Image 1 (spheres, rainbow, N blue to C red):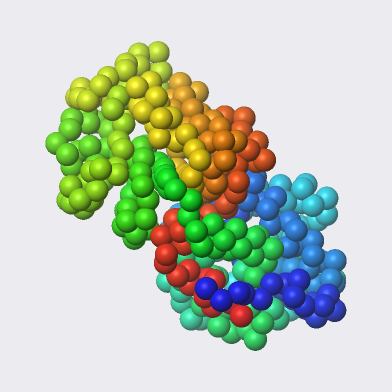
Image 2 (image 1 turned 135 degrees about the horizontal axis):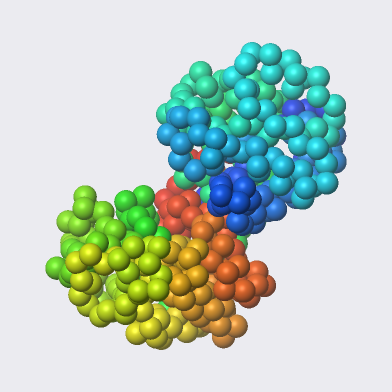
Length: 398
């Protein structure tokens, strides 16, 4: 991939009095019951780009998504709480715009003083965003003079705010976060250190098929855990009880495992319960999970097995937790893997950890950012990029 132009490649007066639209990635985990943000890493990582532009005299308009509202307004997925957190972190007002489709906002943006920061409401409240609708793209583009992508985590999506609107600008630049992600990962991929160990967790594999297919050829070992593992175990004829799996992916998983069984490592024991709430009646079971029980974490034998693979040196890539780590009873597997990755890094491995939930898991395991080679804001985008795919939101930039 050719080097992309970064905001710092231009003199600050280039941005003076200009309206700059920054596509940020504020898709952060929210605890709606407590009305707080569980992990604000992605918000904090966006601040250097915002600071640079407001100090250059720009008016900054931020656009992001949160969750998957599928074109429906959902108050639980409003970015208002994010605007409040950003304001706290930056120690300056952040204007929250929840009705930006109102035609009057274009004039309001023109009249903003230099150094203003505006955050638009969740872009995915509008179906046109994920459809990359041309009219919606033009509307977003009408708000600004310059386009900046600082949302590495959504750059694998050709959506209106990551791709379509950018085609309407003369200047389409990378922010500091995107630039740092691309430089680190590109350098790592120039010569991947061996052994190359990939750890895939989380609940779904459907969104990761393309990347996983490519990584299977590149990696020496691929650990698959979380809900994703039970699709593979089901495909191999294992009994998974009531554990979550993707029925439409079973045939694919069967073919993949048949071809790469020497590389793929699956859980060999499981922490199960009749429901997520029944933490006092958990069982450790080996291969066969009884009917009526669901796996919520990996078991102690699996922890030992995974630790024996994640030992360094070499290169380690991790995306997705081992279980429902948010619940204390089901956090052990994820915490052990997080600490194993940190220890392998200390032993000389290059470690890349990506995805909002994975970063939250590191925090829970009390692993410091300095103990990991690179903490990426990307989950799916990082998977795609490491797998060798082009990212539309990056390709469109100057």
